[in-house]
Length: 193
Image 1: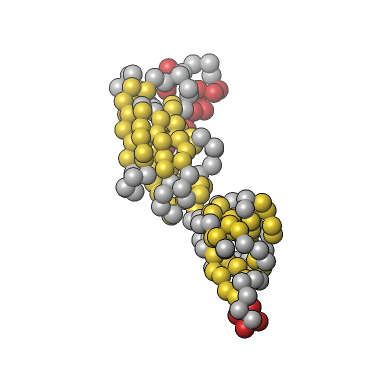
Image 2 (image 1 turned 90 degrees about the vertical axis):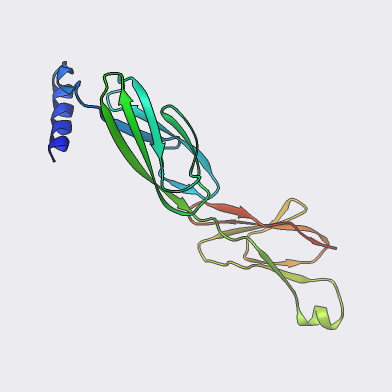
């Protein structure tokens, strides 16, 4: 509690008076993501920057940690490249030292949102099978949710925005699903001869 009081007191005095001598014994850190957000889609990459609260601190010692294996892809001083491979909440901690020898640490929790599953299921109707025809064939997403957006493509041209699609001609079909959080996944191409 004492450290919090000192930080608040220091903050108020720094901005109330044109003197920052009262604040030199403490290092206050800030972490910022490249987008300003803390929610990311699975598979995305972004950076985190550490800096001093007042902006004039010179950070000379840097250490980044996370209990999630492989989350921090690379670090260079006050910068960290993050690769969001695993869905869930992940804590990242930065330990910094300024040129005055003051130490501080700060943590941020990043939420990695799962991508929708974009697998295609194919089936022929009763009459298509009965008359031994190739078309039409029913294509549908294995994962269907009301708040998802679906886009079907035939030979890289958009065809429909539905969870199911009726294929009437040969070609290369693909499904793109976007979740309500904006996370997107692409199906493997399905070729119908």
